[in-house]
Image (cartoon, rainbow, N blue to C red; front, side, top):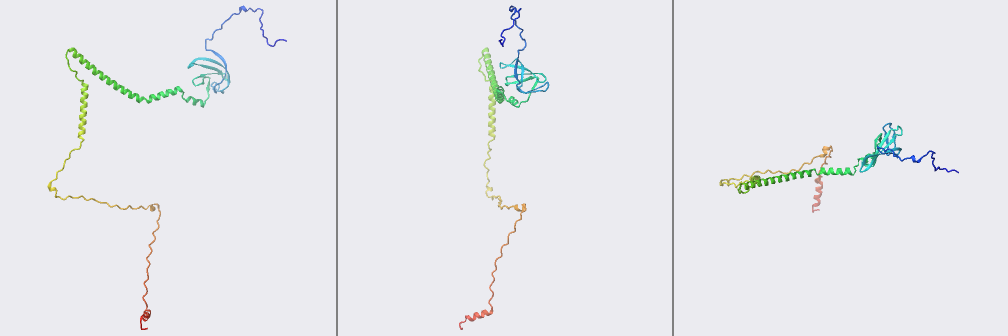
Length: 288
């Protein structure tokens, strides 16, 4: 029974192994390309025919190593064909955002989560923003520092000028052989004179603000016997405040007060009649 797998190879009769020489093919001068099997990393729309390619669609793509790098990370470019019009679509890796970037032949579909993620600032942008805020915050401080430095430089320049002028006078005096006392600088005299004038002006201003001495008024003897007229002081009596009738303003009618009850009249007793007086007079006599 023959073997199923043929392990031997056929050599023709005129085969001469000495004629076989090792040869090297020409090297590819262009970019290195290799065929890989991949899936679409994002959903896209072909710009040639308008075909939509969903994420995860499998393609036989050509992989190219570009010369671009991000922090020594190589960036790769991929070439695929549209499933409808066979238009070429290229996209490359984006290690900065850990994503892919569509280059040519298609347009990436809108993804809300991706837009929100891109709007978020990364560490570098955050550091740049903090540096800018600190620079803006310290603008006034830098201005104050510059003003103080300018004042200090002016004071140092004035002091140097005074020292140079003093040294020049001393050298001139030594050269001429005349010993002269060093006179104070004119700027110092002018400053002292100005300070004295300011102090004198302030002293005079405060002296003028003092209260004038009115003195005592002399009273003549003839004015002693003159009666002193008292000014009439008007007095005011406090009147009770009248109460406002708010009910009348609102249209509420008040009931009239009930009249006071009339006093009871006691009837006077009637005068006694003549008969009764006669009878009473008869009972009063002792003769009966």
